[in-house]
Amino acid sequence: MFTGLSAFPLTPLRDDAFDEAAYAGLVTRLAEAGVDSIAALGSTGSYMYLERNERRQAARAAVEHAGAIPVIVGIGALRTSQVQALAYDAQEAGASAVLLAPATYQGLGDDEVFSLFEDVTAGLSVPLVVYDNPGTTHVTFTDELHARIASLAHVASIKIPPVSTDPDAAAARVRNLRDRIPAEVTIGVSGDGSAAAGLQAGCDAWYSVIAGTLPAPALAITRAAQAGDFEAALAESARLAPLWSLFAEHGSYRVTAAIAEQLGLVAGYSLPRPVQGLGTAARVRVAEIIDELHLVP
Amino acid sequence: MFTGLSAFPLTPLRDDAFDEAAYAGLVTRLAEAGVDSIAALGSTGSYMYLERNERRQAARAAVEHAGAIPVIVGIGALRTSQVQALAYDAQEAGASAVLLAPATYQGLGDDEVFSLFEDVTAGLSVPLVVYDNPGTTHVTFTDELHARIASLAHVASIKIPPVSTDPDAAAARVRNLRDRIPAEVTIGVSGDGSAAAGLQAGCDAWYSVIAGTLPAPALAITRAAQAGDFEAALAESARLAPLWSLFAEHGSYRVTAAIAEQLGLVAGYSLPRPVQGLGTAARVRVAEIIDELHLVP
Image (cartoon, rainbow over all chains, first blue to last red; front, side):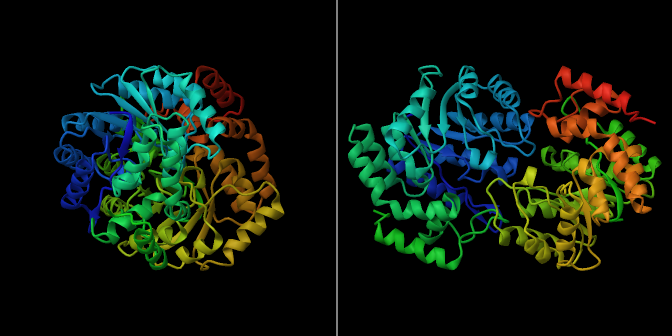
């Protein structure tokens, strides 16, 4: 479950309410495409903006529509007891695993981050993916902190930030982490533009934003890398460079929502306000890129 | 209400639940000390960690125990609709004003921050304080953004981050903002160690962490500044330098909680986990400083 392609669907809103019908459609698409896991309620899935009951509904819907594909459910929140409640809900909903980022308002020291993972894993009966997402949490993981957390029972995988585009630097980064964590804990890359480089550098998985909405190109990269054909994986990633440029400019979260809105997979204005969708000019560019890159099979 | 000393009490927890008895004691102390306003559920009051029902309870308790002192209630949350619900609750509880920081998970652009304040003020019947707290929100306000927001109906005051210790730089910073906002909108400084400098630089108010737990020294600084005796205000602030050093080292949030715990005003471990209180060595130093600086009259 913690290797290959993990797809992060959006959690679309319609008039500020969870749009279960659109969500079911997104999850069904992923199951039909044959991704290796579905990560519901990740950052792409707006988890931090949703109420507990909305998150419970989304977790249940994801499990219901994922069929045989394992579902990983994000359980992050600011307070340990809130995370524990969300972990309970996710497991009740049938999640195969949970995903936890150390969300912050007041900054957290390493001992505080560790205590969060210690307290939460102590009550789990499913595996946990450590979500290292400094862009949103403002927490910087050292490899030493990763090693402490990875030694806890139930920790099964680590989602790391984008790796360097320099192959030697990327390989060294993955090896340094690999050497400090248990052999059974997998490493997954995030940052879609560097995913092919991450897989070449030795990552076991790709925790992917774009795969949650457009699984086909992400599967092409992942399957090529898994077959050892890194040249093909890097070539497919290079072909998608205009998409990665849009991600860099506007953020993968807003661009992916615009893609889903453009394709009619979700209603307009699907993100939680005050987050706004892309402006008109950027939406035109999104539509052009979907067409130019043949992003929809 | 938006001048002088605004005191930010902690919202103490006991066994992870809102400790209303301890909170009533904190608020009563502030009313008896004669602060100019009480700002419930600010960052010092852990607002982002609390559930809606806990925040409703705290807002009601603050108004109940504040007597004639006006109560400003923090209403920040990640999603606009959540902020609107909290604004409703605060007004129902009898808040004299509300306080709003643009909390983030995904970063927000200026138009998004503005839209938050626009949407929220449109439904208000009380004044609003803009909470510019980049250390926790990761939002950087330009003076242009401040000017746009300050032009909205109901905006009454701006809480700005610490000013420079250089008097000319501090005065220029306050003047630049002053020149761009309506005359009736006040400016209040935060960052307790720079409060005397901020008042000297022309700020109308001090939005104070320490005043929420130890109002006496904060009142001494504020009343001196209001009387035009900035030398006395700066001298009293300089006398408290060991306290400001502890704030700089450990954060005012954790140090203030340790002070309140040390004085028996709140139970031990009063902060929301995973935030941890100070370690033993720092607590010893807190106790020494309370004694050395005669912080309790």
